[in-house]
Image: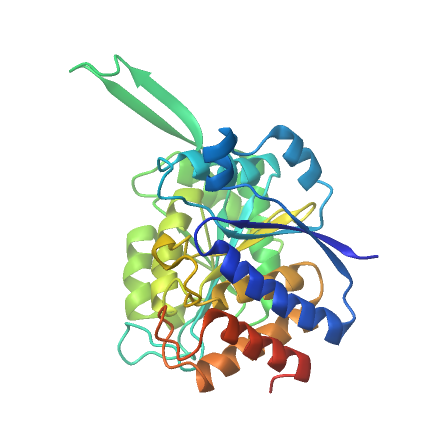
Length: 355
């Protein structure tokens, strides 16, 4: 049976990097005998400007029948910030209950990190972020809006079910990753004494079921320091929606920038969505100079999550070969190759079997 893959190229340079991701997916499919059917959707800024529509409920019903979604980028310079992000990205995550945001942070050979004296051996960890609750649940409101007495309330929603399934996923992931087998809870128990009391208690209780996993706790402010000073301390980190959003951007920077960072919005029981982290980069649209490796890595992560681990790892090896031996820089226009040429090189390596 063929995998049915929803493809949302989106805005800006999204279509360009998605094109290269699909090129590599084709090479992996041919080499490893993976059948798939891509189904393209035009949701994004251009459609919104034409129709006023972001993401209709009928599309959600259709997406639920897919095996995975491959997203390029959302963000259009002519659309007010927040409209597309909330109307497409957040709606997809919440409606499809993609309760895990999975963000590998790995420094590849040949990629520069701003951290002095750190290399690929020191920067290789994963952040498991709760993806459907917390401050992003949208609970709250205004009182006396627009007056000098205005009050704005934004509430963090944390349920036992939501926290436990995220924590349990993190323990299972740490076990399957089988690297250091250490899971760190990132929180703020000294100030956010209700929400993170729930997180800490749940974490401790679930940990009893995983005696092979070492556990640790760190405040989020300490995590940001140690990401920079001692990234080698970390294996897998689990945290809430807001803190996860912040520390994964820092993670992207220490692994070499948004041009290499990929992530997944995971529903282990249903359809998951995979994307490059860097955004739509509208100033580079149509120039064929944007770095496509994050989107290509997102395809690798998608295949691994679908159970096609050998194919996913082949893509990662090919990307590592390209960063280590071919690219002059990760920056747009400075790679030494065009966007499409980078896609061609990775595809060839995947097809041949990168070392």
